[in-house]
Image 1 (cartoon, rainbow, N blue to C red):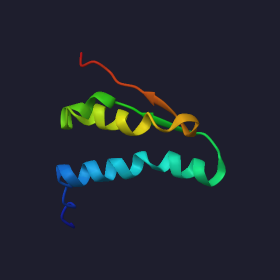
Image 2: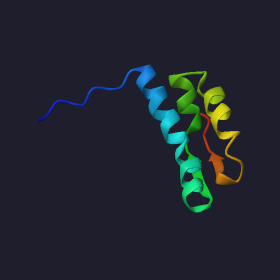
Image 3: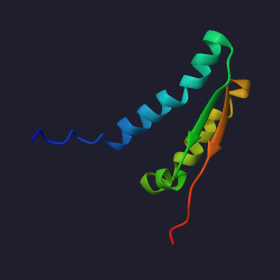
Image 4: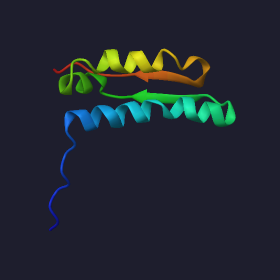
Length: 77
């Protein structure tokens, strides 16, 4: 059995998230189409890093007509 891949550190994870958040804008620049982004169990991101909501907002607020976002989550029962 192969060892599990190493989990990225916090800085690497933030960098990866920032790169992914720029995909809708890049696609819009290519073809002018709308990208729909769904983030399910959004609250789990905040458990990992409570500053991620601000980071995400700082990027997506500039996407204008490039993307529509759906944030979904649940409360623990």
